[in-house]
Each structure stands twice: as C-alpha cells, then as structure tokens.
Image (cartoon, rainbow, N blue to C red; front, side, top):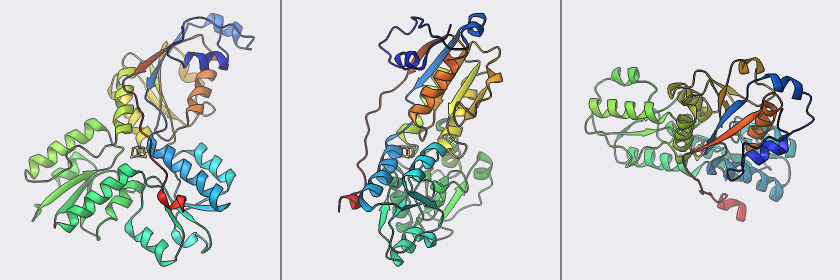
Length: 345
Ligand code: SF4
C-alpha cells in the first residue's frame, strides 16, 4: 500500500492523524505490500531561511520593477532549482561586474560580496540592488569595525566560499586571516597587536565552538562577537537534524552541493548517529537502491532548498513504501527580512 502525493501533503500537517493509511491506485501498490513500512523522521525547521526568501523575492521584484533581464552577481542562493526558475523568468547570473551591461540592474547575491565588487558596480554607475543577507552584513560591519580599531581579524570559514570571499574583502588584503581547521589555528604564527575573530554564518555549530575555544586558548585577549556569527537558520536546522538523525538508518538532506549549510547538515546527521547520510539535489537524483534495508529515514533540507523538493521526495518515497511520518520539530521560526530599500524607489 502507498500514499498518494495528496496523502503525503496531509502527512506534512502535524495536527493530522498521520498513521491513517490512504489507499491509492499507484503502480507500486503490489510491491509495497511486500516491503516493510518506512518511518520518516522529518526534521523541522528545514528549507528556506529568511535570508534566502528575501534574496529570491528581491530578484523577482527587480524583474517586476525593471523588466528582464536583471543581472545577478553569483547564484542568488546556492540551489540549482531556484537558479533555473529565476533564469526562466529573465535573471542572468554572472560572476563579474564587468559582465553586466551598463543599462541593466545588478542584484548582489545573499552571500555578500567584497567591497571591491560594490566599488566596481558604483564606478560603472550600475543600478545596484543588494540582496546580501542582513546576517552576513552584520559580519561585514563587524570585520570593518575591528579593522578600523586596529585589530587583525581571524575569520573561521571555508576558503573560496563566496560568503568568505565577501567577508575577507571587507578589509584591505592581509588584514583578515582565514582559518579552516584546528590545524590552521595551531599553525598560526605569533601575532602582534590586538586580534578579533568572526565566522562564516553557515558552519557546523559544534566544530566552530571547538575552533573558537582553540583560538581563545592561543590568543586569550582575542575579541569576538557576543554571540557566534553562525546564523539562527543554520543553528536551528542542525539542531533539528541532530534530533531526527538519532536512530535513522539513512539521512537524506535535500540541497545542492554548493550549499555550505546543506553539506553541514549531512555531516551533522552522521555525527548525531545516522548510520548513513547523503545529499541529494532532488528525488530525481536520489539513488533508490539506498532504500534497501532501511526502516527509518531522516529527511531535512538546506536553507536554500524549496519545500516542494521535500514534498516531491516524500511523494516518491510513498510510491515505494508505506510511510509513517514523525515530525521532529525543535524550533519555530517567524523571522522575515524586508527586501532592499533600493527597490522601493
Ligand atoms: Fe542568512 Fe543564515 Fe539564510 Fe545565510 S543561511 S541567508 S546567513 S539566514
């Protein structure tokens, strides 16, 4: 017996009796009768965060206001489906400001950009719309403040990730030192003068805690944010995955490989006790042979993955196995960020 997509959507409502079987005429019905039922531990919160919603809305509103094409510096958020949808609406994604024609607006992605990219756009007199997440902008202003006050900034993050490139680029070359691992911290030379640290917003909460502790041990006077820079959405999704991963034979995170927070969720699931964990772009990419022998599967989605992809994955699961869906909810989110003011004008 299997659940239809409509039935799965019903299952997504926590207040429903989620154990009531819903018969369908699906082609897999006979096969499913022979398969053991599958318990789905669905992590909440998952999927879109306030920064991603704002960034996507910004491109949509820019297209509505200025017409197509609207140029976007870098993928607006790291999700293949989101980028494909906005491309179909008339967004053109470029890596360099010099690739933007003089008469078209340019939206800066949610990850933020170095000051040099903003300066390039201003020098070319482009209409610049900044969709950088406000929580990334907070890190930028923190780095600039530390630099102005004469501190060398140690940034914990992943080299070449666009957010890190943007954060390093808030101060002149050499003023921000990037560390990725505990070994990098151990290998730092003795540093003269006052120090401060900041972090990428989408790191592993647990690993970052260890790295901050190592920094404080090496440089007891180092200044840091009152609360770590890892954003609420990253922390909440990792907490929910920790709770849902325990006892899972397999944990599936829906998200793109370029999405840092999605990759962290896979690592978090493994560390929290899932026997196996993997990232999949969508149900179409998933290797269904992985379901063999699985009785409990954990499911979550990165902060840039649309909920429809989770629904499609659950529907595809329901076509293969009888589902029992347990909602593992560890936090409620009601944060909304307004779109950039420039759009209003
Ligand atoms: Fe902002 Fe966090 Fe979402 Fe990144 S993951 S866009 S920092 S809320």
